[in-house]
Length: 194
Image 1 (cartoon, rainbow, N blue to C red):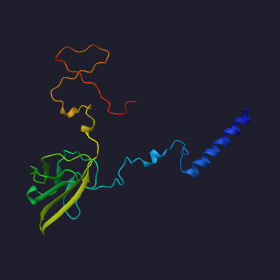
Image 2: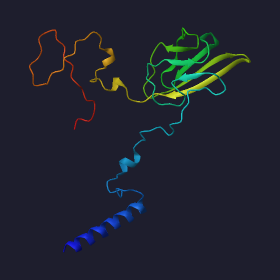
Image 3: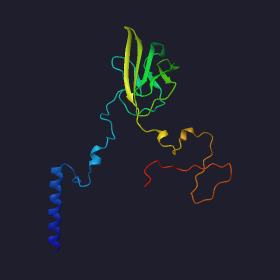
């Protein structure tokens, strides 16, 4: 009896291995659905990004073709004095042209463009500027993307960076309310309600 059970298990395991090789999936795609096939990728198409602007000594941030910038981000140029950068143009695909100030770094090796207004979440931003070089002025351009979701999409999430001079006391929720004037911070999970 015991020998028969072992033989049956061995045959089942062998059949599973053959099917997994044929289907290219260890799960045999038993739990897949059409919704999974249509889901977007969690990773960018390539992880090989560089902040260097081709043919110049500049590195920029956000790096060209990346997807991780914040709508309120500055655009940084590192590797040339701020005085050598001019005619900076920043355009959001939805929010349009952004005015702002180009501020040189105190150490003299770059500058950041600080837009007057934030970009829209989910938009593509195009940046262009003129860089003075030893051989003359050179126009540079790059683009980056903003993710679609940000804090404004999750109003119940507390931004800890905005908390200043706050006494934080963590208590189990079963304890009574604190005396007036005492602050309690509770963790908030911004996810699925189930």
